[in-house]
Amino acid sequence: MKQTGWRLIRLAAPFAGWMALALLLGVLTVASGIGLMTTSAYLIARAALQPSIADLQVAIVGVRFFGIARGLFRYLERLVSHEATFRLLARLRTWFYRSLEPLAPARLAQARSGDLLARIVADIDTLENLFLRALAPPAVALLVTLLATGLMVSFDPRLAAALLAFLLLAGLALPLLAWALSRRAGPRLVQVRGALTHTLVEGVQGMPDLVAFGQESRHLDRVRDLDREMRQTQGEMARITGLHSALSGLLMHLAVLAVLALAIPLVRSGRLDGVYLALLALAVISSFEAVLPLPQAFQYLGSSLEAGRRLLEIVDTTPAVVDSPASALPAPPALPAPTPAGSSLLVEGLCFAYGPGERPALDGISFAVPAGGRVAIVGPSGAGKSTLANLLLRFWDYAEGQIWLAGQELRQVAQEEVRRQIAVVSQEPHLFNASVRDNLLLARPDAGMDDLIHACRLAQIHDWIESLPEGYDTWIGELGVRLSAGQRQRLAVARALLKDAPLLILDEPTANLDALTAREVMAALQPLMAGRTTLLITHHLVGLEAMDEILVLRAGRIAERGRHHELMEWDGLYRRMWNLQRQTLGDVAAGAQPLRLDISPV
Image (tube, rainbow, N blue to C red; front, side, top):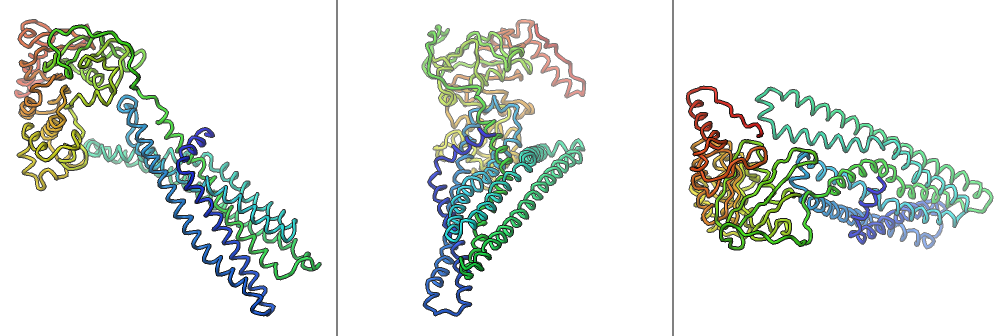
């Protein structure tokens, strides 16, 4: 936790100037408060003796000055400290998101979206307690303690010693007590809040299924349990706050009594003018303004450090794919067809497993796609088809084998450059809770309206968009919930057309679609595939007659390869899959139970 604190403080280094200014204004605010209280006390006590008004002029001016100064400095201190804190929190959110982005999707595959949301929102907000209440206040308290002690020394060293003792108790002992009492509750509060956020997000996302299966009450009970635990933890923190508030007040009043007990004998002996007794009492009270916030700051220190630890836990994760300087790699072998630069693809001896000791998802895959060529990757679910697409997009890195893109080994090319050369239409394209236009511009932010319309016409979706109430400015809802599955796919096709990349990956583009919609989507894909190197990944054997080559994967290996008519001549896996799909369609139409295909590894 100590290392976490220092790392968080280093993140605040760019705002050191703002924090130093807030520190100075904080000291001036408390000093003005001490000046206002002591000057007022002196003025009232001195005026009771009915001196000449000329003897009170300095005190009167002092009261006016310190009264105005205290309000002005307090306003400026709050303005500067909160401005610095909010700028820092904004920087932390950007820093965390930038650290999060390279981890997707490989390192975030096991992460929970609700937990990530809690970290980027609630945990960073929790750090406000660290930067706003734990950095500057101790420094302000130290400087004010020196100032107040110096004031007391001018009257008598014993008064200064008494005040210093109580200020140390309130500024050191109470914060340490608050930290000790909350060292478990603080981190637990952060953890429970993260769990509650995750549960709520899951409940919102899965609400239709919860209702359909009658599990909404069970999920609600889970939310209530977490909410109850969070309220109990918050109650514990509130009780600790009340305790240290009461003890702070007690110490302040004991300090006043101690100072007065020492000062009254001095007045009786004539070594101290009695007019200063009220000044000394109010000086003690006003000096405690600097140390009163410290126990609460230390109380929330545990939760702040836990929030920081949770952030650094993600930030310190090593990305699965890291760009490295180009190394000396062997030259690519000759391709079987002309290879204009920019769109050829060659895969040689590719092996990949998602984790140590796991069965390889791909085992010795080799194939070539010349520029403008079309290759289909087919096979049953779990055969490794989507894994190949993930490797091509550099979402994961491979240790064995090679992938050559336009004559360059893929690991030599920066991730962003690789993805700039590839357009993807996946089986579940992500659509943002924005307008149709905004979702299209994701592919090319500088595209004009003519470009959008052209892409949508080719994707056969322009007429439907124009029929919407606000056309291209129509809001489509979260994940495109207001669109049908076919409309979402055609919008993804239009987005890929707008990107105009030389290499096209179609990853199960017709999955979860009915036969008619799948046929329409495949028709919309034809202009997208024209002139582009295309890799079609699918387990639906529809429209594969136009493919230059079909690779049939089984348990991560190429079981068969060839064109459609060649594979249909063999009594192999492809033909059995093709026959099964047609038989299944006929049986489903007739109400019969579909047959099962044996796809066990060979």
